[in-house]
Structure formats: C-alpha cells, structure tokens
Length: 296
Image (cartoon, rainbow, N blue to C red; front, side, top):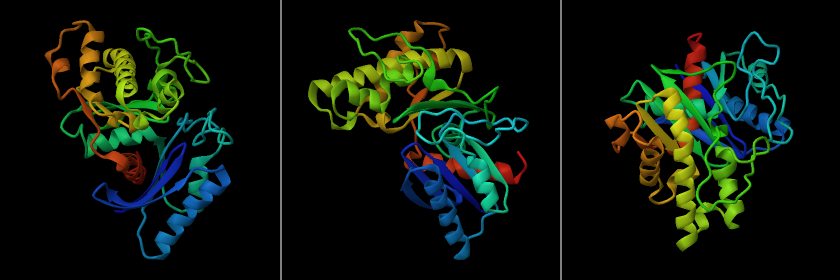
C-alpha cells in the first residue's frame, strides 16, 4: 500500500506520498491562513493522484492542540492554539471531504516519535520519548509501537521547569510564561539574545547552549520519571547546536540527582539526537495513514 502524509507545522506544511523516509516524494510550502494552506494540500495530492500515484490513506501529523477523541463533536479539529486563525479548524474533515480514503490524525510530535521508533534513533527499543525543540517544544512517548494518549495528547513542552542560575528572563509562553517552551524554544532564545540560536557566536552561543541544556534537562527529569523511557530522542532546530546533546546528558544526570540510580541513564545511548531530520514529521504522517488504513 502507498500513503499520503501531511506534516502540518506552524510555519510550514510538508506533504508527501510514499511508504517511509527512504521512499517518499515531498513538497513544502509556508503555513498561511487555513483556507489557502489546505487548498495547497488538496492541490498537491490531487496532482500526484492525477499523475498516477496510488494513495490508500492519508495521515496528518499536525501542530495542536488537537481534539483526538472520536466521540467528541470537535473530533479532528485544532483546539485553542496561539497560531492566528487556526483555532477550531477541522483539519481532518477538510482532508476527508476532499479524498475518499481513510484519514489518520495525531500531533506532529507523536508522528515524529512514531517515525523515530520505526525507522530512526529508537528503532531498537520498546519504549521511547521524543522531544522536539524548535519554534515550539513538544514531545511524544511511544510504548510497544503505540503513542500515549489520555484526555488529550501529551503536552510535554508545557511542563514546569526550575530556573537556571542568573536567568531573569520572564518567558514567552502565552499561557504559562516560564514553562519549558516559554524558556527555551527557538523564539525564546532569539528574544533573549536578539538573534536566532544558529546565528550566535562566542560567549553568547555558549550561554545559549548552557540554557538549552539546563532547561531541557530540567523538563526531561519530570518526563523521565513519569514515562520511564528506554531512550530519549531529541530533535528540532535547537538540537543541532554544536555540542548541545552531550550537555543535555550531563545536565540530566545532575538533575536526576542519582535517583533511581539506573546505569542506563548515564549511558551515551540514553539521550540521543534524532536521525530522520526533516523527514521525521512527514514519515510519521505516513505511519498515521498506515494505521488509518488498518483501522487503528
């Protein structure tokens, strides 16, 4: 079977047709207003199908929050989001109305977590936690191939964190100010230093790495205790800061404080960089399509 995948991001959409990261044709376009952006999505798949591509189901890995409970009237919609104009948008319905195929929906981070667990940095473990650090911070947990859900999907980027030494930054989360996302997302780092993290050099880059490592380790302490993953996979733009992954490992061991004393937590293979890069989200969307085609 072949699938369509949509990574619906706050700044860009990535659409693909294929079966996985080694077999996918993608296109990217900026996220605009809902009507224009979803028209671009429908146009992409319509063109691919007219050119002979087979699409048995479509998966959507979207920014959220999302209503994922089928029994609720808002099922398939984006809930209250800081992305202007997108609150309440029926993203699942828009795709389902355009194409007569099963449609699967989950968060963009759960999609990426599924992809890293199938093909990437967590393919050899049964449980993993994926954290992406970029425009926002989000996370997903996979246990025996299944993403964790409850009343809603996990919102790992909004866990409370301890402040780093000498840090007086107020935080920029519109809901919590100084949660994990508010303190160390890409926009938070840019606001602190007046430039994006990738443009920083010298002492400012060192300080940015210190802050990113500290806050991610502080957030991961809570998540590691709550989820008990065999591996933590870190992706997103800030994960590419030179040397930041080893710093996160060291800072996490400090934050765990020797409890519960698992040797696995101290190994280099416990906190690792994501492997699928820019294809993680759309590959996860293909997996959501696969699950929808199988009625899962």
